[in-house]
Each structure stands twice: as C-alpha cells, then as structure tokens.
Length: 431
Image 1 (cartoon, rainbow, N blue to C red):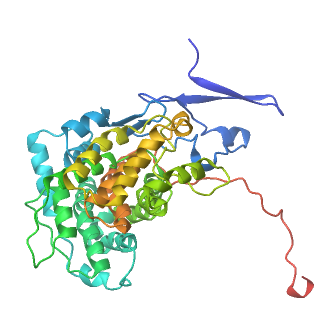
Image 2: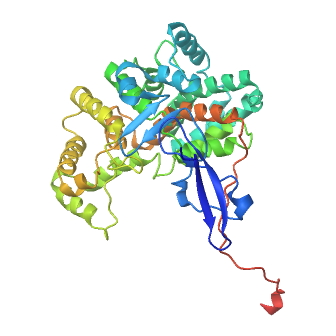
Image 3: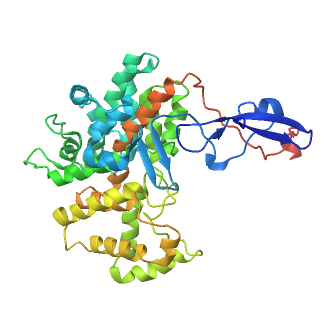
C-alpha cells in the first residue's frame, strides 16, 4: 500500500523530504507543506491561492467540475426544494438540521435581536446623503462592537453564540436602514411577526404612512436567493473574515471586513454588473453586436453573469434560481419593461451559441438574481447589500469554526521579494 505522502527532491542538494497528504471526506487531497520552509528553506508560490487549502472545514463543499454544492453534506438542490433560509442558517451554524423545537427556539432568538440601538439612527447621519448603502452597512456593522463589548471575549462559547445570533438578526435591519437613509425615507422597525426575508422586504419597501402587503412570491424568491448565497467555501470575503478573525478580533469587526471584500465588482458586485451590462446593450436589436464584442479578445466588453471562476460546468444554483426567475417574471414582472425581454433574449442567444456553449459560459446565479431583484423593486445599488445580508450567517459559521480549530493560528502569508537588494542610504545632497 502506497504511503499517504508526497516526496519532493531538491535537485541542487539531492535532499529528499516526505510531505504528508491531508485527505478530506471528499475532494482533492492537500499536500501539507508545513515543514517545507523549515527543512528546505523554500516557500510556495501560488498567486490568488488557487491551489492552496488555507484551512480545514466541514461547512461547505464545492466541486466546480461536476457542478456540486453541498451545505454540511446536503445537496443545494434538496435544500432549495424542501427547506428555507433560517433552517439552513441553523444547519450551517450548528452542523445538523434542527428538529421542530430547535428551529422554533432559534427563530425566537433571532427575532429577539432584530432591533438595533436607537443611537444608531444618528450614526447614519454621519454619512453623506448619497453614500452607497454598502459604505454605511460596513460602518454600522463594525460599530456594533461598541454596543456589545462582551463579544470581544471570543473564547467564551456563550458569548460567541449570542454574537452569532445578533449578527444574523441585525444585519437585515441595518441593511434596510442603510437603504432608507440613502433615499431620505424614515427607518422602518422590524416586525417580528414576519418571516426573515419578508421582514427585510417590509423594512425596505414599506413607509409609515401606508399599509404594505408583502407578496408571498417576492418573499419566497428572496428566501431562495439568500439560501443560494449563504456560503460558498473559501471565497475572498469568507477568507477575509477568517484571516481577520485569526487575529482574535471581535466578530463584528470580522463581518465588516467581509463586507468590504464583498463590495468588489469581481465578487459581490457581479449581479449589479449584470444590470449595468443590460443597460449598456439597451435593446434586443443590439444583442448580436454585443455578442460579437464579447467574443473579441481585443474588446473590453464582457458578458456579465455568464460563466463562473469555480464552476467549469453549469452553476447548480443557476439551475434552481432560473425556475424562480421565470415564476417571478410571470407573476410580478412588468411585461412592458424592455429590460426583462432583453435579459431573456440574451440568455436564449448565449445558451445556443457554440462559442459560449463550448466554453461552458452558461448564465450563473448572478444573472438571474439581478433580474429578480429588479422585479422586486430593489434598486441596483442595493444588490451587493442583499448579497452581504445573505452571506453574513455563512461568514459567522466560518468564523465560529475557525475559532474552535485546535491548530488555529494567526494568518501570515509570505511573499517572493523582488525589490532592491540591500543598499546604503545616500544623503539628499548626493542623490
């Protein structure tokens, strides 16, 4: 039986070193290079960490080649069909699906923490009136550490759990307030008689002067989008949360770093970029021209919302959300809105064009979620905020897992230095 190791040889010295393989439940093994620098004096070079396992985790598994996404071992297709967002949040936080009493207790705990401190209302007034909602979301979430200093004791399991529940509960309230402030409307208090996503819609879209009735299709669609965005292994925002958390900082500060990383257009801003792209195309008659531009390597135009860095097959989340997108368009869509006709025609063309099919550039989850958000009346600058609300419990689960890892240590990536060699300082007069 072969050893569960990899042997490397330094050709310059002939020295050999056996490195152990770390095997997970499923997926590729990882070469443990812990002793490489100590024994050989070499670092590894991996820009973007595309071949580096930064941690061990039991939360989410992604197989990009086969189009597989598992939460705690459960296929996303099964969860999307049978479960709902808060139940899946419980699954990620605690490792198992809850029984009826556990789910009721968890839901009650989340509802007990939905309010934010009244003084935070004045905090918003420190932002410019047209500040992007992601800016205020990041600032206010980070400020929660000043209201809950006990959360700084990250090695107290009870304080960790309370902080986790507070983050899950309060981030929709903070996100809705960020939106309301950006459009000059009064903040709407959470209504705990509503389910999680329905409550968020109410806080965002209702006004005190009128009754607001939440469409169940809208709440169902948002719940599904949130479930699909809940976690996605060690992406850049999750890795940022883990890296900042490795310093021992409080969980609210970790969440703020995750929000800042998510804000980037290459990450959480992808569905916002889809709407921007559709606006640039402008009309169905322009699709052929833009398809050709997308094929031209020398043209900066790219089809946003098609293909995925991880999924080399069809994004499993896109299969699920596509069906919901059509249901939302059928029941809530404005048939006179040319944007929807344009989006669906673009989808049809791309799915039948050999160039995109051969490269597996299928519509991804961001393509469909952007369309759904538009139908629900959520403005484009709130798309990334909605992503942050959905992803925050996933960040919390990753943070909780990291804190309790026996071999957890502060993150410290290395580098290949390419700067000047040692040199002497020259006085200003001699330069």
